[in-house]
Length: 320
Length: 260
Ligand SMILES: Cc1cc2nc3c(=O)[nH]c(=O)nc-3n(C[C@H](O)[C@H](O)[C@H](O)COP(=O)(O)OP(=O)(O)OC[C@H]3O[C@@H](n4cnc5c(N)ncnc54)[C@H](O)[C@@H]3O)c2cc1C
Ligand SMILES: Nc1ncnc2c1ncn2[C@@H]1O[C@H](COP(=O)(O)O)[C@@H](O)[C@H]1O
Image (cartoon, rainbow over all chains, first blue to last red):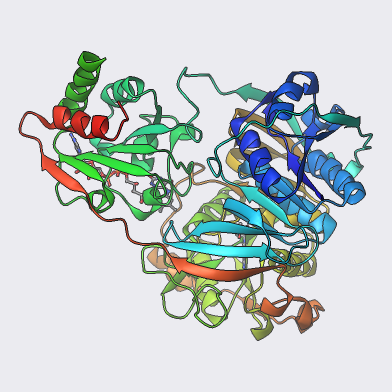
């Protein structure tokens, strides 16, 4: 079976959940092979094996961390050139998309971004077909790459990670990073402070607050904690300085697709909907019965979030 | 210093966007087009850098005749000149072809110190064209930039990723893609609107760029769309009005759905 290269998204070997989703998807279309770039493979190996990475290509050279994505694209291109995989899967985030774009040029291949599903192509030639959600979630598109090695970036939550224990056969790959790839130097890296809550894009429950919070996110955070969820925010809340940009949901923020999305004090502008429209269940608290977001609500409360949410939190506590 | 802002003309996101039934390309005729809002941040960034010193700002677009509007808006905001690549053979071009064409135009414009782009097109939204340009032109690229400054031939950027915020430095010439966190794009002033009418706009065809028309457009696309399905509208569920029991009723619903 043809290998499917999965670029591992990790922080010093701590594998992010999206990668386990990619490995799960890769198993449906071929033989998953992880590409691990940078330090920490020893830490990552167990997780990669647990999710079925039969092979792991490991590159560890300091340039991978010293410069922005270009060295990673170079290393991945070299491995893809040698392995000739049936497809390359990457995470749809800033790094993943930039690496995918560079890789497409290097390999002369087509690419598809923001897939929400990946399945075997009907040609039986090891190709893949992808599903994308476009125009703010208004359309579903089935597409495939028809030139070169299919390169696909996949959104978080595209699949439920399914374990399939193997021991990866690892291969150290030597890559010499060119001068061209050393143009954007990373001079400092400040990790995001952990909140103790689930990662926004990975969470099964997201509780978001908007302008209606009037700057007070305490009820939103309390509700998120009561449900074991992550906190999100509308751009209006972020622009007002009430919540950090990393938590913005929408077109220019994160796309989330949780089991439950609770929007409190958010009107439902198209740019916000673009980031949450594919949530399984949508619940709304808004004091304006005319707010457009109610149109997409599975359940809604017309009311003030400052009283509705605290009461809900109390009710959840009294039940547990 | 020469700065080029890449601007794309896109269907209005607040209108009902659709696909062309015949070839599954984005329908650019049925919906009003406008300058991609996310590219306004690139123009504003270019103007901010230019305001600080001696620099000219060129707005570059690739798109059908209507895309001239995107250039016009850039000129009204304050760009000095425009370049519009327009050719019927470009219809249906994908990101790889777009990047090749824009790269050729940037080479032709020549002596470019800084290329500024938006973080994504608001229609296609792939966020890959700038990284692809960097490959073609062998330039540094810093994407998803929330803050940057140029000084002494170096661009210093803050880039906010998923897991960390990074400070990145690159020597010019470089490509920088900016997010909507970076600034507040200006509105064209009356003076700006009048001045724009006299600013030069060059229109280029594929022949001007020495690009073989058979290598771009829908027929040369590296990916194909097999099917487009309109997502069923979400149907509204139960909406209750809070009469002192809103929170409790909310939890009753959540419990029925097994979330609590
Ligand atoms: C290029 C571009 C990109 C954008 N990207 C994004 C994006 O990624 N994400 C995003 O969210 N937006 C984005 N926007 C902005 C978007 O257009 C809206 O302006 C924004 O989503 C509005 O946020 P909001 O719903 O919190 O505020 P508003 O639209 O002001 O709505 C506030 C809501 O709160 C309700 N409310 C007020 N007080 C209370 C209360 N006490 N209790 C309950 N309800 C209350 C009101 O009835 C109202 O419905 C973008 C815009 C542009 C132009
Ligand atoms: N046809 C185009 N003409 C000019 N600039 C473009 C075009 N397509 C993309 N760009 C630039 O590249 C950025 C990212 O585009 P994309 O990769 O399509 O999401 C946009 O914000 C623009 O600045």
